[in-house]
Length: 320
Image 1: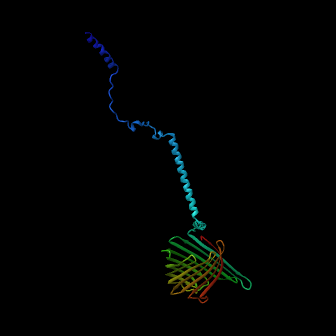
Image 2: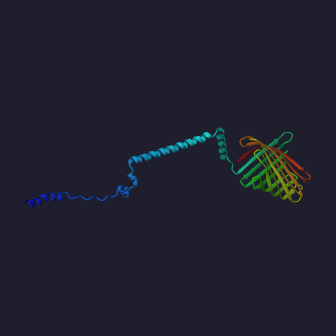
Image 3: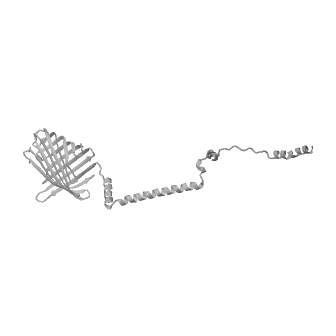
């Protein structure tokens, strides 16, 4: 009886322990949090670069400065290397080439000259002569205009008076060949032919192209109208035309030129040759010494077949 009474007393401590510390269940294993979940989301309206630390920003700035300094140093080295590779002669040649480009002439060029001769004493004579040349030249076309005049008096009486105008337009087919149209007018009050006008077309070639020697030759045909000095009527004729133009640059300040022209037809054959020596005095001013011979196969009763002129002129050229 006493043993059954002690059994509830033995069970009371076990019931109290069970109420104080209940058994803790074992938790189930869970996956590790991802990096995306750990990273904080950027606030709305802000830049992601704002998350960079001041140390990182400073490091990037220093890198950019170093790159700029390196690029500038490389450029300086390349410029110095390029300058050192040029010799003194090459620098001089480059400077001359740049100067030539700056001084490249325009399409217009020409020259003007005037001469005067006066004699007194046992006989009195006065002679004037002048000439003007004007050239317009571009890639395909070249126009050459020339005017010449001579006037003289002997003992107060007019003895020489002649005017000549020529104009030739060239079309450059290539660097050597060209086609041309030429107009020539001449009036000579004391020559065998008082007036002459001709219109010709033809083809030419540049046999020599310089820089020391140049030679152009051409041939063509056309028509001519002339008035003899003896008072006959005006004559009309078909003609053949041949010409040559030679230039020799002797030195930088001197040159020699020779021009030849032949017009032949049924009524008359006209030949003209002009030789000229040009000597530069200073700059574009020069002294011109020329000799001209002109021949007509038809003469009048009071004129010679061949006329010659020797002239010393003071000239100026421009556009060259």
